[in-house]
Amino acid sequence: MAAPDELFCWEGDWGLPSVSTDCLVVLAYAQFAGAPLKLKKMSNPWRSPSGLLPTLRTNQKENLTRPSDIIIHLRKQKYNADLDLSAKEGADSLAFISLLEEKLKPALIYTFWVEPKNYVDVTRRWYADHMPFPLNFFLPGQMQRGQLERLRLLRGDESLESGEELEKELYRDATECLNLLSQRLGSHKFFFGDTPSSLDAFVFGHLAPVLRSKLPNGKLQQHLKTLENLSSFCSNVLLLYFPRDGREGGGLKASSPPPPPEGGDFDHVPNKRRKQVLSALAALGAMLSYALLTGMVSIQQEALEEPPDPEPIGGEGEAGEEIH
Amino acid sequence: MTLVAEAFVSQMAAAEPWPESATLYQPLKEDQILLSDCASSLAVQAYLRMCGLPVQVVCRANAEYMSPSGKIPFIHVGNQVVSELGPIVQFTKAKGNSLSDGLDDIQRAEMKAYMELVNNMLLTAELYIQWCDDATAAEISRPRYSSPYSWPLSNILAYQKQWEVRRKMNAVGWGGKTLEQVYEDVNQCCQALSQRLGTQPYFFNKQPTELDALVFGHLFTILTTRLTSTELAERIKSYSNLLSFCRRIEQTYFEDKKNSLKSSMILLINV
Image (cartoon, rainbow over all chains, first blue to last red; front, top):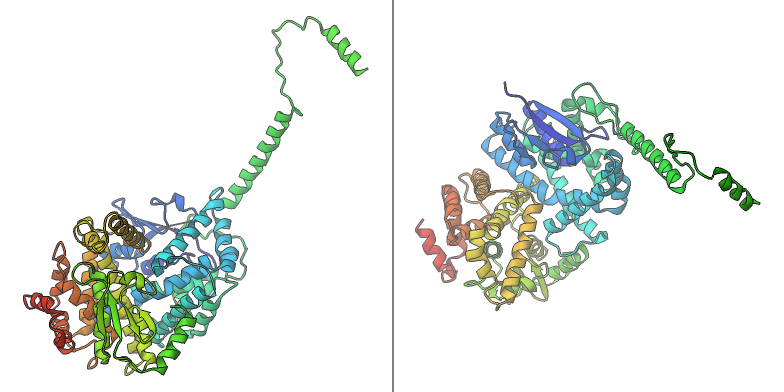
């Protein structure tokens, strides 16, 4: 049997297998379709083969980064979660996924990356805490600029100010989208019957971070919590398909250290210890170089072959006179 | 439109009836207008005809700049200016004309979802083919877009628009797609629409809604516009129920305006 494909994705937190929407979509779909994937969880996008996360490295050494591309690839390998869907349900899937992308995604980008309190307290802090040195200094800012540009282009606006108006507009579209999703889900377990499909993966990927993270400015979160069927849908998926992650860390502490690594499945980078060692070495090196440069500590080379100094007494005598 | 402005517009809209002098602005039909703008404009025209609201179509070279949101088309009703299909639908709803009142909640959810499908896939594919495919951009899009202006403004504006659209394609994740993949996406979208339509006359059985107007606008324009290759039109022609859907709406709502759609009808008959 061919070796399983490798999936590089963001680490998890708040009880989720991953914090990024795209990664969650891919992970959920893989679980639904029963696709065996070798998971590599990391918080350093530069270590992934394409520089972006999520990335699927296939057996043909191809790197796929878009969730839709990854899902198509898995389908070609006969891991298809949409087998039981009728043609009309397949069409509805496509339509509702488009609805998510057009109406909900801009609001999510705003909530996590543009809204000042959320960005500073939650998003930037999480990425800065989890990324290795020295990426944690500039990469979150770079990611934010990328997301801002994306939001601006999605909306087709010339300029984008994070203000009350923009927030109201985006949240209005998003709440409408959430209401529509809730109406469509009704009281069913999944969107189409009793087995989950790709639409369930997309909805889970978009809603789970909003539900589980602790946001200081959480209007969207509050609205989502009032839609009980969507909240229980997410909890259901977590319970059934990601039991290990659901148990650890219920998202109570925002600044707690990441959960301890679970058994051999996930590669957990011990960046805390490495950071400590590196910072200790850096401090030591700084102190040593300061001492050397100012002359507090001088390295004298013992030159045993050299003849003794011709006027040792005179030198000392002069030194003695000067002190005097 | 901002929320405050929208609330204001709705209030004003509810106060007055639809005037006879309502006008719809779009770029010049013969020389300037591009596929995506033509599709959006036709969708709005179809919607207004379905509501029974008269509107005059006026072509202006600077229509894009006149529009409040920068998108085509926009309508000028009384003393208000509203652009794009979504806000126009809400505007007419405030005046008491709505096509989707008879739908229940689930149907309305599906209608909105399918409208987003068309916007997300068909419109994005049209923009991609126009501006990201080098052959089409050089032969058709850039010359047409900059036709009212003289050199060097024409070059500057055309390239500016092309760069803007290419950046948008990258932002939504279509930047890395090949033309074949885009055609495949259009195929999937049409398949979904065809499944949903089935054998019914309109998407929600007997009465047309804004979804029908939007789908008609895009499909009809794609079928009747000459591009560098006929691949896109061929994909749509393989779905016979979509073709008869377009013909039906054209015959029902556009037969008095035979002149403006004349060239289009001939092409459609040759299908």
